[in-house]
Structures are given as C-alpha cells and as structure tokens.
Amino acid sequence: MRLLHTGRWAALLLAAAGAATCGPASAADPNLYFGAKGGVMSSDHGGYDDSWNAGAAVGMHFLDFNKGKARYGSLSGEIEATVPLIEGDVSPSNGNWKAWTIGAFAVYHSPDFNNVYFKGKAGVVHRDVTSSPSGLPGTGSSDDPAIGVGTGYRLNPRNSIELEATFMDTLTFISAGFVF
Image (cartoon, rainbow, N blue to C red):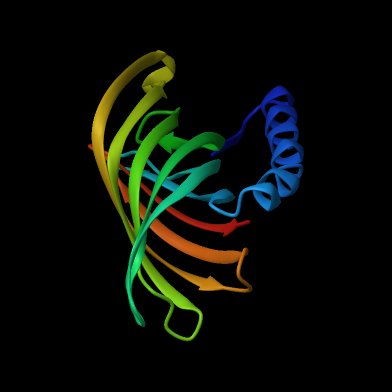
C-alpha cells in the first residue's frame, strides 16, 4: 500500500474542518444530518489488495413510519462521497489501485432498540477506479446500483456511531463512522 501525496491529505483535512462547521446547520434543521466515515475498499478482482478510503455524507430525514405509539422506522435521502487515503497493491505485479465514489441513496432507519438501530440503503454510485498493474496506468468510471446494510448506536438524539457495508458492482466498502 502506498500513502497518497500531501495535497490529498490537505483536501481531506479541509473537508473534515468543513464538516465540523456543519453543527449550526444541523441545529437549525433537525431533519438535516452529516456524517464522516472511514474504512476498507475491497475489489472483487483477483490480486487487488484492499485500499483505505475516507468519506463524508449529508442526509435529510423526510418520512416517519409512525402510527400512534407504534414506531416502524424512518426514510431519509443521503449523498455520500469517499476518497482514497491509502492505495491498494496489485499483485503479482508492482502496481496499485484506488477508487473515488459518490452516491445517492434512499436510507431506511429502523426504530431504536435500547439506542441500537439498523439501516438499509439502496441507490446509485458513480465510481472512478485507477489502477496501474505493472506500472501501466489505467482508469475507468461507471455508474452502478448499490445497496448497503448497517447498524448504529445512538449516543444522544443527534449523534450516532455506525458500522456499514456498501456493495457496488465490483467494490465493497466496509466502514465505521460518526453521524452528527
């Protein structure tokens, strides 16, 4: 694995600083939420080791499935983007690969059970994959359907910790994140 150059780190830190300022925006609209996540991006291609990505999400809660005292969950719309932090190796050659993604999802959140909830999402992801097996660079991009499942622990009414798996055509992103 190879660490990406300083410019990408600076862009990631700038994005994190921007996300930190989202608190006032989410306080003004309780249906608006933001998230930051990081994890392993895996490829289905043989010989491609995992890369490490970080990402951000913005979502809007827009529908509750509640009737009286019964709670059935809620529906949100979410946009999520990830950027590569550490490239994956390509074996047996001395190459590497990385993937950038941006997606739009419909997200179902279950009711909380002792602060634990489950989520499922479905949507479309645009991905740009760059690989250089044997030192020969190549890129490809596509728009693919994607689904995801996850679980979260609600720390308070606004903040949660989540574990999630998102499945795209030939990529899988397993992540941990914080929602605020």
